[in-house]
Image 1 (cartoon, rainbow, N blue to C red):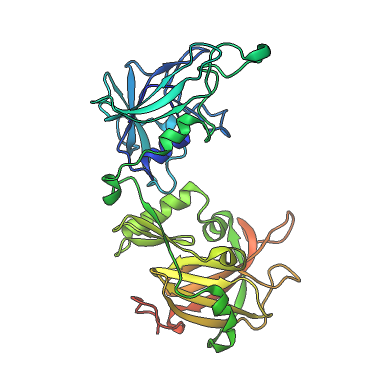
Image 2: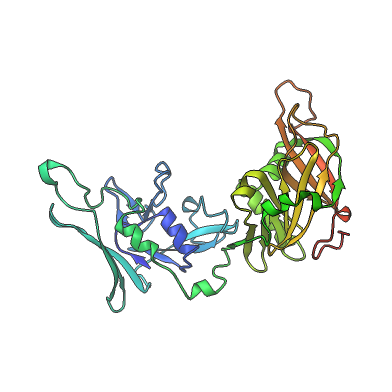
Length: 387
């Protein structure tokens, strides 16, 4: 697509190159009223960030596409938010200058010429001029009745998702590309449904076998705390988890509650619904998902295992016995996990260590850790360590 009008907001470019599967977007370089050049607009909540500024542009058009930070056309100042899912960590927005656009579809604008006239936005085929869609615009010239000022061409950016420009852009798809893997910088976000509800698992709690475990107080550094309880928030965790997948034999690794599969270019999550979000906790590991009940009878919790397709493999009742609470007076909740060697380690959230409190060097938080050797767990598909 080539944009001849007022440019696009960053989220629009983001969506067109990811979920809409467009290979590139070409934008006419525009002059800013206050001086300088631009090819787009920041989003409404990011006015302080100069996304879309293009004072470096010397040609009439700029072609935007996905690439790597090592590419010559990489524009880091345009790529701040392009390194998190669904993009690979080394993704950069490429901005290549072109004298003439090559896209097959054009988005352009006809501004109003009088105070009583409405303009329009239009999608049309470049080669034939055939109009694909057209909507009236709320951009007018002059003043309205009674001297009330109305919007004028160039006054505001196309940020409102209800305006005609946004609606037309939202219609664009690349149906051919949707059937293929797409850009190597993209990873498809996939959701699988569990074959049994968490409510049913809880309702059958007495049927599941019991597994005795013991908890130990543990101290975590700031990086360890982030890796266990905030592993889907920061970009450095995403980059580290993709690196883990690249180095693993099956090119599979966890990303918090989701599972990275680089062979299939997917990032899969288990849809546990509202109940799962509020009362259960999910951790991806061993090419599947562990789902733990966050609360329950004192000293006992449920731990369910689903394979990567959402099929329940087993449920156990974890009996923690006498739990050494890391926060006095509070029952423990499973809110994090890691795999260490041949152990699955479940964590209670614990608390932040206060100033002046005795602690090991570099410790940020004190938690309760429940270490379970994998060989003590019921069978899991493809896991020889499990019994």
